[in-house]
Amino acid sequence: MGSEYRHIPQGFDPVFDGNARVLVLGSFPSVLSRENRFYYGNPRNRFWTVVAAVLGAHVPPNEPIDASIAAKTALLHAGGIALWDVVASCDIKGSSDASIRNVRANSIGRVLSAAPIEAVFANGRAAERLYRTWVEPATGMPITGLPSTSPANAAWHTDRLVAEWAHALAPYLD
Image (cartoon, rainbow, N blue to C red; front, side, top):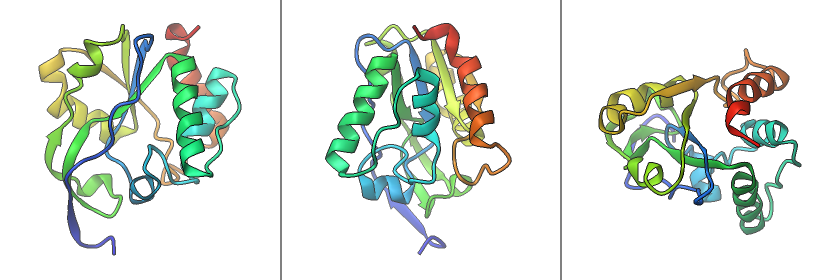
């Protein structure tokens, strides 16, 4: 299933409101995220656990899907965090960031012009690399790379991820 390239014509819309001060960017939605219709839909991905810990909140539920999306959106809004992906569409093998090709980047300026974003962070090296290549030249806004919350990043235990993310985000959060 994941060994063949597949063109995915569209990722997700950004999640933000007019109070977002931080923009967190992933690379592109995984297969499980696309199936679950929202960011970080793989229950083994630690993104929601890390963000909830950083904000001192409860981890949003994964089910039912519509309630999960609403709870996750509310968590981001309450924390002043905008969320999107660098890539709008691409060819990809399964969920492999390393396989991403034929990139069309999202118009990140859409969020930057609508919210008082003070800092942009990448969830992982692939998102950081893609941003530097496809987006930073247009926005001129630098990005700070954070360790990936992906289950593939087994070298980083959840407590270590929370500490690193909290240190990076703390200056921008209430």
